[in-house]
Figure 1 (cartoon, rainbow, N blue to C red):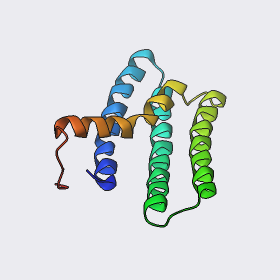
Figure 2: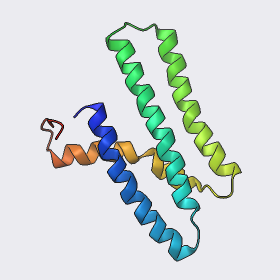
Figure 3: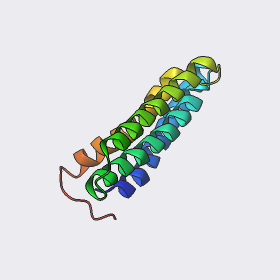
Figure 4: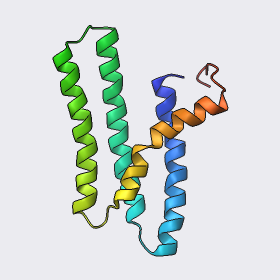
Length: 123
């Protein structure tokens, strides 16, 4: 399983999460959960791409430790910005943002469980 496969499959998990949170939002008449999930997922995709760049820099280009630390702090700042927006803005719920942060992680676990640790050929 490579990074592109994870990103493609995470879209499906994201849409399933949006569907579930839309139903919950309609029941409790609050759609801020879905907006939070969207915000959390977008930030999580940026963080995932940043992690890919960090890994590539370490393995391929022998990136300096200072640059790795800066990119890691940037990753944490992105997470903090998402939580800050959810606290300050009324139409973004913090629980949705929290769930959005886990979409790619859930996708990785689901793919690992489905394929039982075997290699995926990208189909």
